[in-house]
Each structure stands twice: as C-alpha cells, then as structure tokens.
Amino acid sequence: MALNMKMNLDKKSLIQIVVLVVLIAVGAGAYFMQQGGEGLDFISGLFESKPATTRAPGAKAPATTADKKPGAAPAAVADGKPKADVPAIPASPAKGQIHGKPFVVESSSMENGVLTLRFGKDVNADLEVKVVLATSPWDVPAGKTFKVPGAAGAAVPQIVLAWKEPGQNGSSEQKFTDKYTLVLDLGQEKDKKLPGKIYLSLPDEVKSNVAGTFEADIRGFRIVNGKPDLTADSVDTLQYLAFHDLLKDDKDNKLEVIASRDGRYAQPESPGANMSGYIEVEYRTGGGPTAIQRFQFEKDGGAWKIARTIGANQLDEAHPLQTPDAKASAARMLAYLAAKKIEADVQKKYPKKGLYEPGLATRHSDKFKIGVCEASYKLDPAGEAVKTAYLFRQRAGGWALDRELARNEKVDFDTGRIVKR
Picture 1 (tube, rainbow, N blue to C red):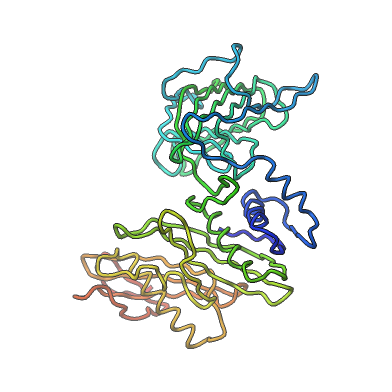
Picture 2 (tube, rainbow, N blue to C red):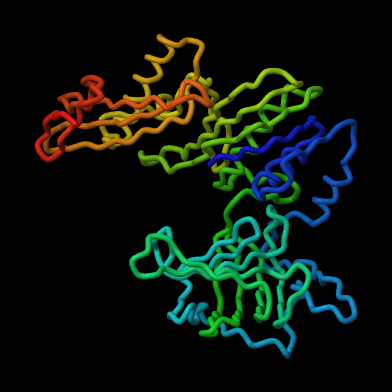
C-alpha cells in the first residue's frame, strides 16, 4: 500500500486527523491545510452528515428523505419502509442470477459505504455484487432505505457486478449508474452486524437480479458516537493512530504527511496472542527535514493501540511483538532471522543509512532440513534495490542461519544441494 499524498495539518482537534484519514481513504484532494482557524466550517460540515451510532436493539433511526426538485429524476432516499409501488422483497436469504449464473449470497459486508454481497470463498469471489452508496466513508447507514426506481438522479448508488471467467485469475466487472431498480432496506447495527433486505434488477442483457435478506459484517474505519472506532480491523485505523501520535506533541507546527506506506495487519500465529499491525509514515514538521517513523500496533482488549515505534534503519520483521520460537512456522522463522541479519549488517556497514521497501520471500524443505530467504531492500528511498539470499539449516534447536549465498548459487530443493545458477 503506497499513499503518496501531501497534506498539512495544525493540531486543532482529533477531527482534523479523522478528516485526513478519510481524505486518504477516498483519494480526495492532494493537499489540505488548516491554519489560524480558517476552513473549520468545512470540517464541521463533514460531520453534519451524522456519524454512525450504535443503537440498542429495537431503537428506531430517525427517518431522512433526500430533497426532490420538480421534474428531477428521483434520487436514492432513506425514508423508512418501501411504498406499495416498490417490488416486494422476499423474507428468504438473498439470491438471484448474476451475469447469467445462479447467485446465492454466502457472505456480505459493509465497509466505507460499500455493501458487498458475495458468492464464493476465494479472494476473488465467483460472483459479487457491490452497492456503492453515496454516504460518508466513515458512516454506517443503519436504519436507512435506499430506493432507485429506474432513473438516474443525484447521489444514486453505483452498482458493480464482478464474476470469474474460466481460465482467468482475476475478475471481470460491469458497472451501472442508471436504468436499474433498487430497494435496499437496512436495519439496526448489532454486534458489528448490519441486517438488511435488497431488491435489485439490472438492465444488462441477461437481466441480472438479486432479492432477499442478508446480514452484513461491518468492517473498516468509522466514527461511532462522534469518536473513532478503534476496534475496527482496518489500515485506516492504524493511520489514524499514527497521525494522532505524530501530532500529539506538535501543537504549533504543521505536520506534512508525505507518504503512508505498507499498512497491514495480521492474525497471530499463536493461540491467545494479539493481532499485530504495521505502518510507515514519511513526514516533516514545521518545514523541517523529512523523517520516517515506523509504527507497530497490537489489538489489545479488543482495541488497536500503538505497541512501539522503530526507526528507519530497523525492519518490522526483525522486531515482532512475539519473538518466534521452535513452534513458529518455518516461513516466519526464516523471515525473522533474515531480517535480523540484514538489519545488523546495515547498521554496522552503513550507520547513517536506512532500510526501505524490504521484501522477504522464503522457501524450505522439511525433507532436507534446508531453507532459503531471498531478500531485497534499498538503502535510500530512490536508490537501487540490494538483492541477496540466505541459506538456513534446520538443526536440533531449530532453524539457524548457515551463510549468505553467493550470487551464482541457489538451492535445488529436489536434491537439497547447493548448485550453480
């Protein structure tokens, strides 16, 4: 993940950091500045769109209706229950046919204003329907009904179909912005689930459609009761925490975020351990020199927090929150040992250099008790990549670094021998 966007902030409030996160998430303007109180109407305006609120079961959301002008095509609206002229939605689980293939909703999610209905277990679903709602990215539109009766209008959701073609690794897509019929009735959030029912009829040649009920997992960074939801598993959550940390001691100087890179989070390998995350931020404050700060995160007590920071000459893989032991997977152990070796060598040979764009690819053989980690990294963000490979042997105490392979050497995993390239 590389978000090369320049933005300036003064520390006025946490809302500004939230706005920055949202701007990055949706790819909005490449430059945003708050100075001497100017532009605060813009910030308050963003939050007038009512942040998502978690309500008790049975509580009713206030009904809202989009403004309609005489002669204008009706927009997507949120006005309670569908009227009599709207197609009835069956009370059974949502299904239909997409791109001429039977479609059954096996999983669904709501993230950053996008409802996704999926059929298939792989990363690229066999069939997928996305309803891109015209809501704030951090808002969960609980209790709202969106209706599009076939004509285009203001703030109409975009519909995206995706399907797999035989022999293709990725998915094909088709988008619709008008001439379709949609009724999307969303219930109240409970336990990060958003129940709903949908009727969708599309104008493609095969008349793709889906109708019925679903329960969507709520994902992504969001605002709940005016506060960031730090329980959300999202790179945006990690960005929020990182920017907040950089701003906390900088009340007078502007923070210029030059880039936010390599944001990620992962489940723990060990039972009972916390999830971990990482992000790198390149920035400057008060017109000073560029600096890089790397943040490591953990999800503790159900909420994300900064675990620690590491410097530009340190690698995330060399400083895991949990040091891998004999029970760790070979891939994790080889990456850890290789990262430790790279970090130590660079700090010794080039004490003023950093480590950038690291890449670690591992392969091993339990039969021959041998492993390799192919590594690449830069000593300067704009420099050439350094490439090397490390040989490991599995001994009685576990995996151990044997040596660095020569450029003309490689491991033949069919024989376990070191051969010439």
